[in-house]
Image (tube, rainbow, N blue to C red; front, side, top):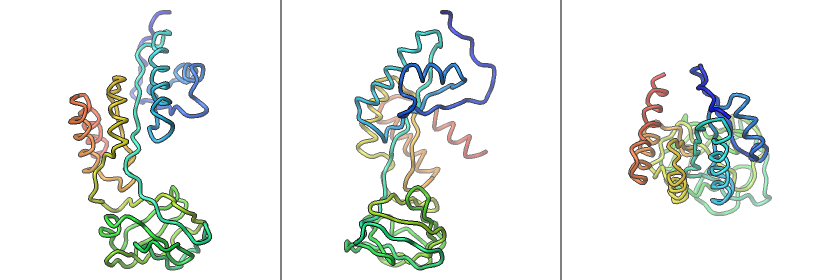
Length: 236
């Protein structure tokens, strides 16, 4: 089968490879439907699982679809709250809720955040998003190793849920040991696109630093391409 001509459009369609789209048939169908690139979430599955997906896409390139872009989405650092005495609490809009370093099980009024580097940089007015944004808090007061917040978006909160701090720059490394291993896998598979879930903050400076680290780790200047794209998108 002859290789298809490039699509004549500027918009690019990115398809995620997941449980419902990780067979050759599904990837072929997505490509035929218009997908320009395939995202692999490096947070999920084992290294062998991710290598299998990469190999599958590369093998399909010879089926008449031509070169296909793979984007490796690195997990990045994770912030999680501690545990509750009764596993789950229900937060009500407008109520106070405290986050601190105390390892004691939490309750309806407080819970541990075992990340002093996060608590140390939170300020009044900063938003806190828990459990993928299902629960939202607003910092009212901050002290040494604690913050008092007000519940903005009510909801249930259970053990070890993720915490996102979109208004805060956290002084921590942008690449974890797992990210480094995943970058090595991506480099081995000749993936020149990598992005990052900045769970600590959606921070432009940190994103650039992360890509600089990726370039240094891989020794490959092609990783500069995404840094340029980030700059362009940020300006827009």
